[in-house]
Length: 128
Image (cartoon, rainbow, N blue to C red; front, side):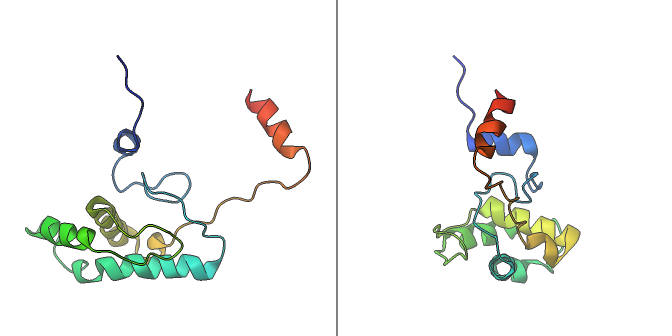
């Protein structure tokens, strides 16, 4: 019996800490980030979670204890109704920051869909 793909399976295939084609981290739900102010707030929130971990040497013991403690807390997350962040997600943000700096923490805006009448139907016909 074959089971349906779960979000965890998709994340595993893409690789932890890797950015998807949408500019978000693998397995992360998409927030509406159409304006620069919201994107900046999200990046600052992410930086705030990892700020005290940035200067820890990579591979130093005790990181996962700190990540789990942060994951247990409740947050007011900009652009989201969610209130918790997984330890793995915080780790992904930390790794991304170490590779690319603050700008990597800023989510990418969605591409705009055409608002012309019938354009959605035409797009569906091309897919089918």
